[in-house]
Image 1: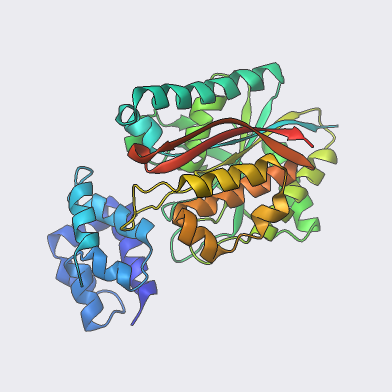
Image 2: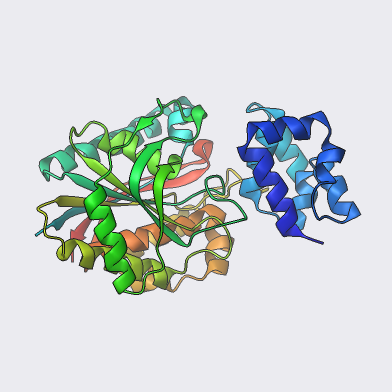
Length: 86
Length: 275
């Protein structure tokens, strides 16, 4: 129910290495810390950037958080996820 | 009295320094050459202060607080990103003039936020690296407009901020010689499914408007039109509007245009000249 909360989570993951590591350790637990509905928690935990983009989450944040979690060489993987059909 | 002695429009694309050689060699050399040309021009203008108008990319400022316009009035360092390939270090500010722009802006009704200790991102660091560093003694006042997070700064507001900067410099008792940079790419789609697309016709339309000094034409472009034709990154033309307004009646004399899909951006350089 909240793109704002999704963006809050992604900003923390993308800008703070401690938060990045906490997310990596258990994405489901991390996602549960935010005011998200069940579907939002699921797409955050799966780092489904395409699904989050369709909810109008900032693509600046999506890319930054994805690269923080998966590494700077994961741009191809990011674009695949962005282009995956709903 | 301080005065604005020059102005420039230029990209701040982080891929230029981070994956320099991804571009075609001729394009790469022309882009790097344009930066060098501006650095030399600044030297000839005997400028001592550069106001760099850039924007955050949802990294420095988060969902908890997004300033519409911000000026660094104290310590400045950067860049925040270690992958640019730049050594992180101090960026010397012109604190007295920055504070005067802030207070003068308040008198003008500008809703400035300010930073006492600012770590800049590539929006300021890239122009600083290529155009300021080689000019010994040239100080930098960083200005951030929100062009990255909806709702972004409106074109009209960007113009008003630029006009306020101009008035502030004109009312400052120092003898600074100031150059103003409006930074950012033209068409580019950042992080979306269209990333890598460059819309050359849109880019040339923007450059033509800037070249004619048609700030009203640039302001008339709605968020929706810019997003559709130029992508989310093209909202950075609001930085250009701000710089053009700071110069007063001015037109942008084109130095270089390169569509560089490898750097995911339509890249334009221009020198602002009195109309």
